[in-house]
Length: 153
Image (tube, rainbow, N blue to C red; front, side, top):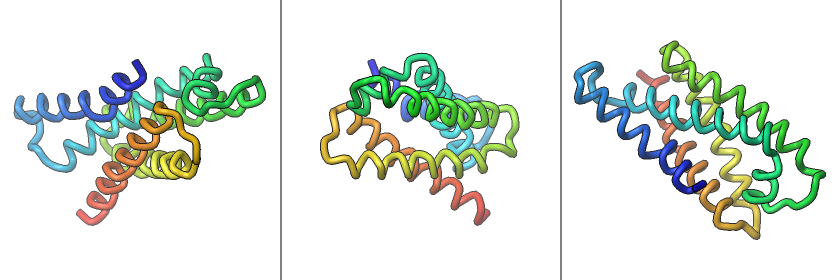
């Protein structure tokens, strides 16, 4: 299930949203349209949902994704959930406040990049942490690339 949620929020739903809006003629196909929908889905909804789950069920992230057993990590995972929730709210609201797209791309790109590198530095990753690492690094490239492009144009 985790794979399908990550794949949907990081790839499938952004691509569908871009295709629908571009084909409907609401916006020209280009990097602004890609940034808009990628920020909404990858920064907004993915981090919002992750934050809610980490706040309500910190044990899932601790044990299933990070491989940490016991109650000691639950407080830290819940704190991570607060950060994910906050970033996710900004990313989600960027759909309604166009001026928030570029800053949300920067914050989301930095978060994903740092998280991806942190996963990569772990010697013993399980398959779910490998998926988190790959998707985090992919998101960082897309988001920071969009941020860089948008600041030059």
